[in-house]
Length: 185
Image (cartoon, rainbow, N blue to C red; front, side, top):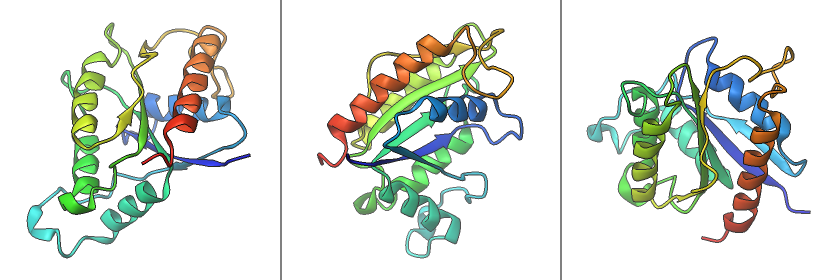
C-alpha cells in the first residue's frame, strides 16, 4: 500500500481557529495510508523579492514541508471576501523564486468554515485562481462552503453528527484525488 503525506495549510492563525478544528476533524476521517503534516505559517516574514537569495529559516522550513508532501490541503476562513493575508503570504513565499515554486504539480484540496452565510466561497474562488497559476492540481468537486452550525464538531473535536456524512464524503473524494494525481508530475 502506498503512503501519502499531505501538508495541511490553515489560513487562520487564531489560537481557537475554527479552520484548525475543521482540519483536525478531517484528518480523523482520512484513510489509514494518509499522514498529515501541519505547516506553520504564523512566523513567516512578509514576502520581499530582495530576500529571494537569502531566505529566512521559517521560509525554508515551509518550502521543505511543501516539497516533501505528496499533496496539500488548504483549510481557510474568508477575510473580506478573499484569501486571508497570512495565507497569501505563505503561498507567495512558497512560490518564489519562480524557478523554485514549491507548490508546482501538487494535488490540492480546498475547504473552509466561516460564521457567514456564504461559508468560504469567495476565498476558495480566489484561492483556486492563485493555485491554478502556480500549477497545482486543485480538486474541483465536491465544493465545501461550510457555515458554522450546531453539530459541526462533536465534543472530542471530530466531525459532529450533523456533518460527519458530508465531511467523510469530501475526505473520500480528496483521498481519491490525491491517489490519482500524487507523484504524477
